[in-house]
Length: 483
Image (cartoon, rainbow, N blue to C red):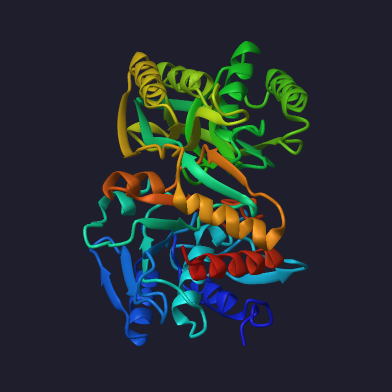
């Protein structure tokens, strides 16, 4: 028996545990995609799988629903794979280990993958059931959503007949999402030159940050571990410390606020009083600025031996410092039309360096296309001023809020009947595939909802068991609704 076998709804948690047992981080969803195809074949359902691994499963209407408008159930197969520093799992190859913790399901040392494994579990549970009335269903399960909505961008939707789409990729029960930001990925490449340097190699680790989802949590005032490296290097410079950069790393994914980073420096004079002073200033400054939103930030210095090293020369080291210090990150503008909505932001999510270049990877979002272009231009201009180049990819459009929506009206009515209260209707700053599908399918009416998922994209992620059950009842009622 599985560890989730005693939870209700049993069918949903059965399939969710099945999904957890199959590695499915972005770009590694093939096994889960194949599982969904085999599920469809075993249930006698029409199915197609494209070269990327996107899956479409079609189910006929149940008796009495043949004349009702068809519905599309949509979610994504991939998950963000993040883990604690001491977790031995390779999330590209190993299963995640779900556990029950009070009223929540979480995972041992890793992200849970509720974003968006819960959508896949709901869809398979619906298709497996014999007692859930529904119109004709088309289940669309995409790949590579978390790395720029790549699967939805590439998928052919010409054979979809439904024009009502339920996207189950929101993370707060009682909130119906009806619009989202567009975005793109940006890579800033800085060429470097190395030279022979003698001294003590000292690794600086910045850790203890909260991190989080760069769309839904970018406004919470949390620090960025990679950007903090720029502050650390600048404090060293201001305290007269001579150093050369040797190695750089930070972050896990472009769309995850980085909670850890490190830079290894060669200090010709070792750890001097100036280094200690800079470390003390760093601790005081981050506590003053992030003591409420990100209180556990720490800087740890570790000597790694003395000798001769091939480190960045002085010019390359200072250009890297300036890039880490000056590259924009976080909220850039709030919406003037929707109170509380982030309009434009970017997340410096990954930093890495090899023998030839340093690369800074961003996830950029905006609900205003011109603002997205302007921010892209700023990144490109700054990178070029520092002697580098920029690559853009993973562009996806915004999902514009529709003033009239029959599907939204239906979902509101069902919610009021089940919960005895009105749901919250929002547009969000995170990217959803509804924008891509709306651009490809004429007349598509979309809504997005889901159960309570906490701390997604982090090893602290957890799914609210009771909320999963309530949203399951909500979904079934929407499916059974007759116009």
